[in-house]
Amino acid sequence: MTAMTKKHVPLPLVGMNEGKVLAGPETIHVDVTNSCNTNCITCWDHSPLLTLGRKSEWKRRRIDAAALEELLADACSLGGLRAVILSGMGEPFTHPDIYRMIEVVKRRGLHLTIITNLVAADAERVLELGVDQLLIGVHGATQGAYEAFHPSFRNGEWDRLLAMLARFREAGRRFKHVQVVCEVNADELVDMVRFASRYDAFALNFKLASLRGGTEAARITDAQRARLVRELVPEARRVAEAHEVTTNLDVFAAQLEAGGEATAPIDEVGCFIGYTYARVLVDGTVLYCCNTEVVVGNLAAARFAELWDGARWNELRARMRRGEYFPSCAQCGKINENVKLRKRFAKAYGEERARAVTGGRS
Image (tube, rainbow, N blue to C red; front, side, top):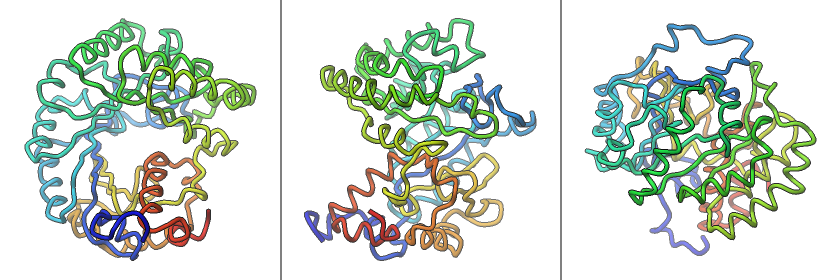
């Protein structure tokens, strides 16, 4: 043990060190709807580039507020739950009961984050209900790039987005901007930092697009990758420092260096997420992480609390501790969180121990 004393180490990290579950997840990520109001070109579910699209029946699926309340009650019984993320394979603000769901979460005193493109949201209700954080998918710094990324948005959505960002700035509410980087917007990287500064974003998260199923057509070109590494990322760092914008450019740079279709150096970082996080899809499928290929079980067959410390979840935790990652882990959607968790773990237990609990890699 290093700088932290044992009593100050969060239970999930103690569990990671000891290889056993000592508390429930800190964060539960709940998909509330598969329906979406747009068709981002990098999306695995709604992109017009997909070779095989989702069926209409799938897109109509959603949960109700009572199901959310039941899930949270069960998860809270484990102890340790602090935060909820509401999102979907679609846009959560298209759900007719989204504001009731916000109330369900906030009544429990939990920190609430909503992942959204914001266009369908009511900014005044978001402010009124005390949503703690929004991860606002912008995906461009100009209207041209924004509409290229969202081909269905051609009816004033850009102006509506800007108006709501201005309203949040006026209200003193600082939310996060998310910029998924692909071929149509990569050249705007530096302007994305300026955009975040203009609207007083709490932070700016860059993510190299994870692509499959036909969306590979949106991948950055080799020339763009080289320019990002050589010119745009260093300039974005300078602009971010000058404008005091918090970014994850270090993580984004590592994504660029991963090469090919990989977007996450998971072998170097390790996976800690199985002790702190869970995701539940609209059909009750419970995921180990955000990867839809790593399934733990389904709420139709078992309660969340039973699954959390059950055989399947513990098998997956043990596998990650050995560094035996799935091929899809090379596109880890939780790379930011894993980087943060590794730093927290290494601060508590040292870098040598961090290597030991992630398969011995550095």
